Amino acid sequence: MTVADMNRLEHAARISMGGFQDTEAALPSFGFPTLRSSPLAAMIAITAMAIAALFQLLR
Image 1: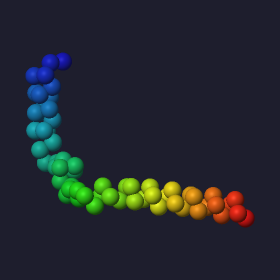
Image 2: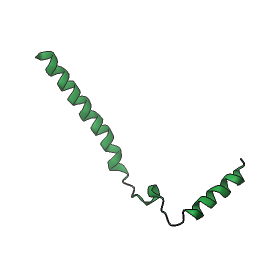
Image 3: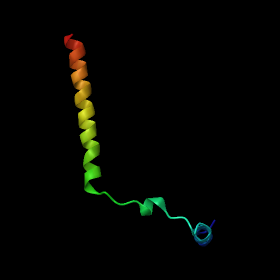
Image 4: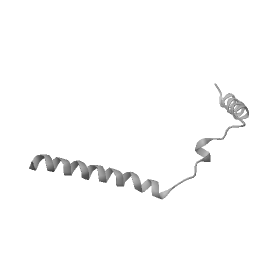
């Protein structure tokens, strides 16, 4: 399949889906705050596991 064929197929798909919006393009970009939540959640999870392990060892 050539690039021209792929472009034609993509164009036909966009025309046939004319009433639908691209959900990824329609979602707002949250940017920086979402990038900070992942490392924070990982740090909290690791801390909780370490506390649970210490609790098990000291009991």
